[in-house]
Length: 203
Image (tube, rainbow, N blue to C red; front, top):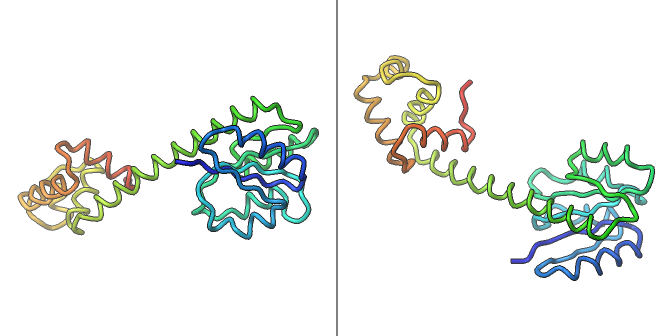
């Protein structure tokens, strides 16, 4: 499966150099943009990938691009900075950049940084997959089963949960058995892991 990397730089020579370097990598899809504005016109529809982003460009600069990337777009940005722009690069990292590298870049150092960025992207994808799977399981629970699970998360006994929900302890046991079945787990600790992965946390 191909990985995508986006180059956003107004310098034609830099874009060509980066494209030549990255084209040596197998299964890497390289897309180039001559300006931040051109990239932002398409950013809402781009595939997940690594973004090589120049800081200083006419129109939307690197910092502007970082702030404008929609929250649903999964990109790991690396900013390219000229000498003396390290302070600006740090501001970009505060705005969401993964790291920065100074121009003229050392090819091996850049490739190592790109590999690290793809690793970060893969880790984020795995977390999202687990979260989605956990939420799908939680969605199978009835409102009362969800209430019972919340009580268990907060460390309450069946008797206390029954009192708070105004039902019998036996009914709580039934809800508890049902939610364990629906979550496809055998132990309470497994059920709690799914709940936390789905974002259900104690108040």
